[in-house]
Image (cartoon, rainbow, N blue to C red; front, side, top):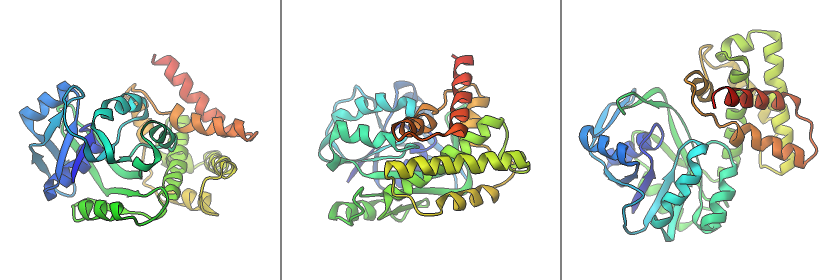
Length: 305
């Protein structure tokens, strides 16, 4: 099977590198500048799980070629629409697409464009960034990629994907409840990014105050109410388990959205918090904490436009 990975950044670059390390046929779809850098320096990964320098195959959106068997799509949501256009020439009748974006809204867009048959579920947990010279720096023990059929079935094709992706130095696994996994991650990352950007603080000082703890609790319960109204397949009590997870995090932990704000970069507020507010309006749910978080992000965007 041939794999196309969209982008060679902090997510796709890392997991693609681990697959290349195993000997999987991986090609990166990148911009011309990144293609040139990779040809000069190779794909460099600095990781707590072992460093790598690889010579990957690369193409650009202008490159003609045959469809791929599997396409991994992992980037920030504000690059997603361009990615859809870029991968169209490489999607054939049997191509499978695994999105690794945060959130859930992108599933509908992929299904609308390519059909439900072609779209699998996916998510990842990783702390990584791209350094100033293009090196991918992965800094924590967690480097997990999860995927599965949206139906939860163990189909013949997902078994082939499982065989292909297993056995790497990263934790890559199949899930038979991938939609639940995706909604749970959506809740967690929306809550964590929401409070850390609202307070402009790592999680420790927020949860160490009565007011901060109450904002965390209110936000997660508002998110849970919205998701249940939408019919999302989330577990009973998931809010408490995620609040507990936040209580156990390192006090210095910052969300990736907070780090983006500190650098003056774009944020995914519309894709994460904004989409949930659309659902809240659809179901006539009052979500004042989530609205405050989203308003804070929109003010940030105005100040940095």
